[in-house]
Amino acid sequence: MSGFSLLVIAATDPAWFDVDKLPVLIAAIVSIIVIFYATFHRSRRGKFQVREIAGLKAVEDAIGRCTEMARPLLFTPGWGGDIQRPTTIASMNILAHVAEKTAQYDCRLVYPTHDPVIMAVAQEVTREAYARAGCADRYRQDDISYVTSSQFGYAAAVDGQISRLKPASVFLLGTFEAESLILAETGNSIGAIQIAGTDSTIQLSFFIVACDYTLIGEELFVASGYLSGDDSILASVRAQDMLKVLIGLLLVVAVVWNTICELTGAAEQSWWSF
Amino acid sequence: MNRRVALVICFGFGVVMFAQYFSKHPLARGVNQAVLEYWQIIFAFALLLGVVSFFQNNIKQIGHGSDRPYRTVSLVGLLAMPVAAVIGGIGAGSPFLWIFENVQAPMQSTVFALLAFFVASASFRGFRARSVPAAILLGAAILILLSRSAIGGPLSGWLPDTADWIRHHPSMAARRAILIGIGLGSLTTSLRVIVGIERTWLGGKK
Image (cartoon, rainbow over all chains, first blue to last red; front, top):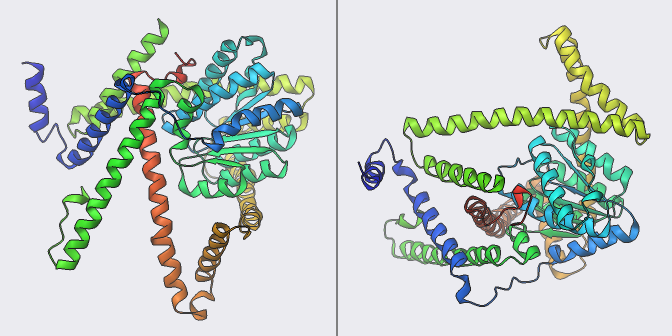
């Protein structure tokens, strides 16, 4: 049986394909096509420019401040996520850039985490960043540490480190839950420059109030391309914008359609709720 | 070479996990279950690594004399709980459960309770009408606070309705806009990792 026949059977057999998920599949395929198009056809266009993001522009200043004040930099990914979460991966991308800079400036980088897998990945990312900067001897594995998996145990441990070490800059980038404000307020109380970003809209409001710079929404995911200037990554940022325009157009069509249905008294059409 | 193997494994698992999401066939469910079980096994080994690292780190720091009291308490806690569980079990009336209920749970509640004070101090700083947007934010916050308090309803009939309108329309619109951005960001980041454009998680950029 050929591969194509298998594909046809899989697509038509209700036991193989969950028809209820067809809208999700279509949306996913459209998104993937747009992302691949933007990524692999980038050479036809000029270099893609990302608007200035204050939170990412401040990364250099925050590291510079640590160097000038001879104080450490504290970076933590929050308690809410594990290594499977895109937010944690985005946070690792920023960590790689930050670690490279702290290695160059000989500034201590402290990274407490609640997840041993994140600890192992962060140690690897940091070690490589120090090696890339040509300062492998400055890497301190003990500073990339696992504290506890308990939410408030983690909050207390990181709070304690912030209070005792008095870092000049605190990076709160990752998935945060109730511990977000506890950490951000403690950082604020010691006068640290704080750069925060998360995928939780509830915690974002706490960060906006308590931190100097907050990466809102997709800004956290753009960081990797923004900081590295890598064309492939920047091209996928362009795809994000294209998809946003597409979603915006669909929303406008849905609003107009629903309004017309309401005004004319026509039965509600639900094709757009798809 | 090692990096290439990791990239191939990542791509393979990414495609398989994406495909199995759209199927309800027992084989696809089985693949999903097996991957979740393997993840638990990996996590258990990583936890062991984390605990060993925590132990070594604290012992080393106690030797250097930094934060000695805190680190000693951490190590005593780390050792006391498993020892109590092995000697007395973890059932009702066991020393393990007693420590958990009378030491660990109250300490966690204490840290959580700090949040109330932090919310108050953050609100005090955040709700200052220094500009027009900040004044609008302050006004909206006062309306919501009043509507959620006991005097909200008796004070005015339109107060709860206005607060609900703020929550369900302007606030929800902004929230959904952020969520769309986060969703697209997550999607592109995941795809970058699966196809190998993004390799920071492997420790290197290229």
